[in-house]
Image (tube, rainbow, N blue to C red):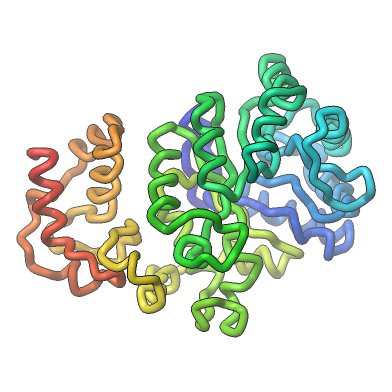
Length: 365
């Protein structure tokens, strides 16, 4: 398992986490086995939003006696009072349900307390100017919530949360379908705007925990996919893990078999992780844009081309730390010999040779 560092806090988080939305499809015993198997494989991060309350007991059993092995996102705004997942902005209900979830898990803290699923300005204003946000901040001061976060499908709302300066993690929907098409309400925002948002997360030091990695399974099915070609779970996971700001992907699993499919990423070869195929069906506006996928590697001169592009894009947005990171690279864009190797391999048609000249001129290194 690979791990990434949470910018605000320094915790090491597994890049593959556990989404709980489909666990209710298994028995309590199978849920317990699945969560325990995930922990044994090095997974240490979980989103606690099952679709049905029936999944609670299996999760609680798995964590009993080893709560410190799994970091949990617990949401303020998830309502299970009727036995199934529901959504609320009512402060009294949200607070009651949050505290009940902690009791369910027999824990006295949430690693991450998330303002849950806000996609509209009116809902943002309601939760951030009322009892829910006040409660979250108070519990953070008391140590009951260790990190504050949020979940949204909206680029605009994500920016509003980032502007508070109080967030450590944001849960956002991300996959090739949402980034390159307008076919889902869960993938709001243009491709360019979404790409810019990911860089804004990174610049703000706010991690991204990714939901909807497979677009609800659509990307895994040739008939359901808007691209009319299936991707593998490994390809989808690699796609989101290559994006700026991403700390952890949270694919939903039903059982140990699904978990094994997700964990296949850990030992996958570069060829199995490659999602270069999306270059064949990405929209025209994606052509010529570096998405840091590293399919241009290996560079004969040893330049980390994806990182050089990433740090350049962030530095132009005012990220001084990204500029410092660029300068500490072992090889710089100025080392490019313009051999054309990267240009021939790029699935998005980026003229990386010209890009290296541009980057070298910007940094003067």
